[in-house]
Length: 122
Image (cartoon, rainbow, N blue to C red; front, side, top):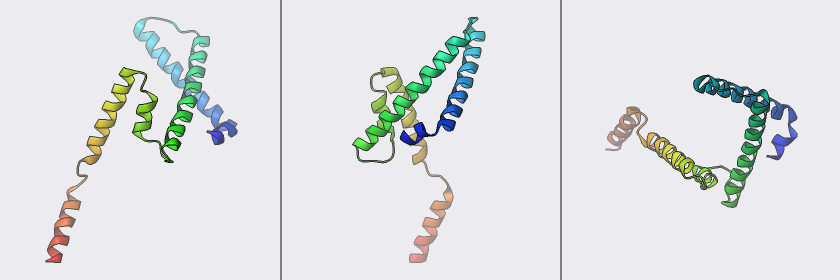
């Protein structure tokens, strides 16, 4: 995360984007539940989310580094959310869905190519 901290323009852009998104979510929630959120609340929530995301990013990097990898995996994310059963269950379910979609054959072209190469061998 060192590179990110050195790039203040990127950091400012991300904080601004997050603040905008949190504001939109709060506006939708306020309308749905007939409540009001102050600008100070939205700013505090945005700041909290930004800092927590930074902590998550650092933890994920460290988990991968500890496993002698340079890539963060689903297992790292599961380890990150291990203290929240509902979030852990959601991450596990989503990971299983993604894995099942990626194991399906992508096209019949591969099967046809495989068959034509077998025919060429005989």
